[in-house]
Image (cartoon, rainbow, N blue to C red):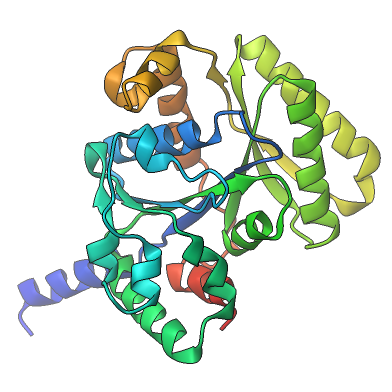
Length: 286
């Protein structure tokens, strides 16, 4: 093999082995802007040169495609039935992000036959080389479906608003995941806050409650900054666009860019398996 070919082979091998970060974005209750966070974080990461796939796994209120003004023709159910390939069901969103549309078929993932699991894993393994991030928009609350995706992900972002019920329900989500499923690490994102002071107050209150009642579980909750309340985001939603696309100079867009940089500057725990196949095998229990 020539020196040039060896160099190219090395570059290719490094690209193929590059860890893919699998991050679930979740919340204790609905109405805290979780799907907006997923969509705009995906755009912010893409604008930083990262390749992003978003999986709309919110079974109760799957609306990521609506938020972005997209009309998917197929979804994961077509993949599970062997009717379409992964590339055929994905749709491209703004800034080149890819989206896997939701389907009630997601509920069947834990009950797939061996042939279906083999098919899905082969499709996903072939696709992994094109990704830097997989973001999962989970449902809200502590249902089995929400836990299903949060447990399979490597990292978990808990979105919380200043409302007392949001803080209470975020604590309930963290408590269940820590006490029942032994998940100890969470990233906390205050959303729709008036500014840094309110964001820190929300984070401090949540951590204080957890420290008081879950001290023996040794939970880690990292502060991810915040996204401010912004009328431009409301206007963007009405236009069926991400605020990062519709109003890139807005305060909310700055918040999402800061969030993306925070995530990029804080690599995942070295103990985590960075291969996306690990995520799929945890998800499919194989």
